[in-house]
Amino acid sequence: MAVMTANKARPRGQRTLGQGTALVTGAGTGIGAAIAQRLAAQGTHLVLVARDAERLEVAAQRLRAEHGIDVLVVRLDLSLPDASARLAELVRDAGVEVEILVNNAAVAAVGPVAEADPETMRALIDLNAASVAQVSAYFLPGMVARGRGAIVNIASTAAYAPAPYNAAYAASKAFVLSFTRALWFETWGTGVRVVAVSPGAVETPMNPGRGVGKRRPEQVADTVMRALRGRAPAVVDGRVNAVQAFLFDRVLPTRTVTRLAGKYFRAAATRKSRQHSALAR
Image (cartoon, rainbow, N blue to C red):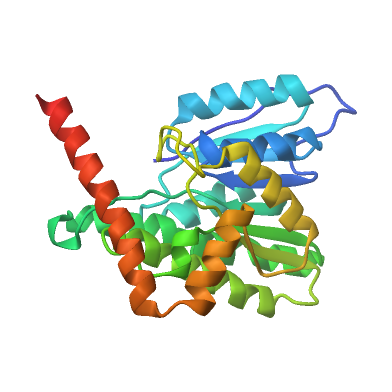
């Protein structure tokens, strides 16, 4: 199900939704919300997409008040089979011309595959990977036809190595990274900017709590804004994360990288299991 809300009618002469508009998925919290804030601050109108309509509407009202922009809110679960087509239809019917697309919506699920729920895993892959490709495919043709636009796909440093105990998430982000690099090549010379931005650990509702080396959503958003002005097909957020991605991708043997990642995520899965056990008592 999709629920859409927009601004109330504006007096004649004021700008309308559709001029310089960015669409951000997973925009209710965390990285997506921070990116939306940065875009709004430079006067970009917004289409905010997420499953939590109430949280989206609160964010939309704040952005309208602070920056005087138009905001369209779309409540939609992009893991559902027809969700990407529905999103494209809703945006088209609203008369919105998307110039910047930010595919940010994602979920994670740590733990061994043998203990995973198959349907949960399917939904993760559909959201993290399939929706990125489908939403891009719906909005890219218009950008190419106009000779301008941008697509930012949020990947992860997990994309640079196999990750035991976080296998589906890492694989889905590896898809995002590979897909974006290919799309970057396909769109070269068209006027459309395509880039993957890979954060490491970030303080978000999906990964709560502070930790050594953890970045803030606002820092990732700043990296996204710089990436939009650059030319590289892929950017890693944060210097430490960039060094790690380089080592994992180009220096260390795959077996070593897999062992290191597995040790890290096995510990994360153990902590999560203990937390759930404590809550169940």
